[in-house]
Amino acid sequence: MKIAVIGTGYVGLVSGTCFAEWGHDVVCVDKNADKISRINNGQLPIYEPDLDILVARNREADRLSFTCDLASAITNAQVVFIAVGTPSRVGQGDADLSFVYMAAREMAPFLAEGAVVAVKSTVPVGTGDAVEKIIASVCRRGSFSVASNPEFLREGVAIGDFLKPDRVVIGAEDGRARAVMLALYREPLGSTPLVVTDRCTAELIKYAANAFLATKITFINELADLCERVGSNVGELALGIGLDKRIGNSFLNAGPGYGGSCFPKDTLALLRIAQDYGVVLRIVEETIVANEARKRKMALKVVDAVGGDVDGQTIAVLGLTFKPDTDDMREAPAVPLIETLQRYGATVRGYDPVGNENASCVLENVALVDDPYECARDADAVVVVTEWDSIRRIDLSRLRRVMRRPVLVDLRSAFEPGAASAAGFRVSTIGQRP
Ligand code: UGA
Image (tube, rainbow, N blue to C red; front, side, top):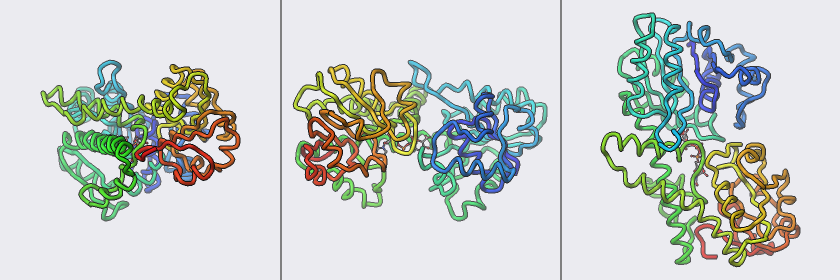
């Protein structure tokens, strides 16, 4: 099939590349000429494991190209994906749809007869209807369809999530859109469930999924606090509840609070959608409040671990991105943690295997180093905020030797507390009695 993807951000780049991997003829479009020329020179704008290999392979096979020329990309496409950003509107919390509407308006004159426009961006209920109206007001041809096809890609494992998803959700209002979207996914995905529904339900599924997962994480985080008080172990508690298939054992890793470009933004946007319809989503509301509070509370854990005062002390933070295998610093728990420690008078050094460059744009007065042992040199405490594999593999005895004081605050259960104690550390963890 001939496919155009509008937007070469995270979703557009991964989706376009994976459709090409399935043998389709894909053109990815972006207005940013500099970005397109970098991609064409092999420099991807995001860090995502294996994406560079897939992009190169499919470009070589002539199935994948990148351009700023919207007209040429759209003219022959049977399916046009909208994969532009929907950031939170500052101070409002609802999704800013201006990029989605602009994409609809600009593609409309060039749409081929019978083309399906599929919205992959995360958008509020009713956006598909609005996109349809915009295109209808500009489109020169008679027939086109608008579908919703939300993505469920996790940064760091996005290619696996795309090529082997748990499910695909297709929201369509007419037979043609349903048939085209099914044709796109059915053959490569075999028996993977394809959930076919109406557009509004598909739009809401995406927000509901993210809000549910954010709530699940927040639930285990609050239970972790209780475990610390009563002397239970949150890892074993998660195992004990998660083996119940009705609960499920994934997304029960207690930590410093969820971050990233999706959960914080989408939970807020879901609240705004509900408010617009006069519905109160109390659980989602509380999830947002609890998660924000948790991120800041983590600094107090560090203060406690060093004996009640970080003023004048040096704290080494290992792992800065919002999770491993990404360079993304958006809403990363490391940021409020570091800012709070600095306000309390600490000097903070940071290390991330991949995220230092992005971290330098959001953190002030933090020395960012390329080596975890250098980061910890003469430090009064080390705090693990992101559980990169390379951080888990750190030699604890060596780490201990370069530090001034042997304090390890492990916010991601990256290390066995017993092993850390054996290496000479005083360990503070999540969800276990100190
Ligand atoms: C999330 C969803 O998982 C994807 O399904 C969705 O497609 C994506 O948002 C999106 O809307 O585009 P992502 O933000 O990449 O994906 O990252 P996650 O792996 O979901 O992690 C989010 C945050 O939750 C991270 O800060 C992570 O450290 C935290 N987390 C995750 C925990 O604290 N504990 C867990 O058990 C799992």
